[in-house]
Length: 265
Image 1 (cartoon, rainbow, N blue to C red):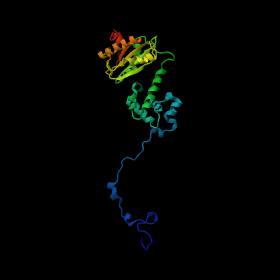
Image 2 (cartoon, helix red, strand yellow):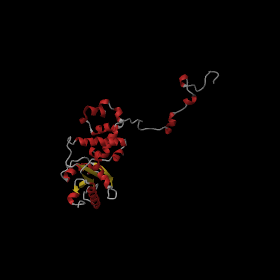
Image 3 (cartoon, helix red, strand yellow):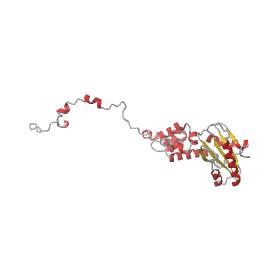
Image 4 (cartoon, rainbow, N blue to C red):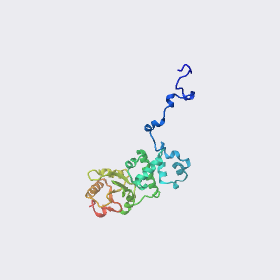
């Protein structure tokens, strides 16, 4: 303390003065040590937070769902604060709504922001949309391989892995459902024939139709395809469930093993 002035040297500025030491500081001397930012620091808040209520996906769907974009419809199913960004990532990843519908749940869940539960909700919503296209109380009747191919091509043609599905049919050859049984690299050693008939037995089906795709886009049946078909036909005879056909789906073509007499003789 300075006895003459009765106060401490280096007094706080708000109390009437600056320390001589502080007065001598030149901030230019510190420039080499200061971090220079060319971009202002910002917080990336979800876009939903910035939108007026009337522009948010949920409001727009409630008002007029037919006027909404695919991204908006997907965002409402996805939910959450980042629903818009997640919906856009989903469309960027798969390209079309058809490819999202064809994708496996695990593939959808790989997209950032999509949980397993969200992926299941998406699959369920898209399946409901497909069922809506079917006339009420009127199920497709399979009169020929072409009838089945017309239903199965959109489901299987563009897939990048092999998928095997079973279509249970009633006594009038009306389609009861289409159930995915396997996906991956299919061969006779891994296909458990009993699994193919389980959906038919659960639905009291009179017959089944089997189909799988070739990611190579060439639907020419392989020796493995013929071997699997032969085993399925034999099992069907034991279970009293007719095997109507086995279709191999390519990109734009399909082959009926029944028509070719492969595995059915």
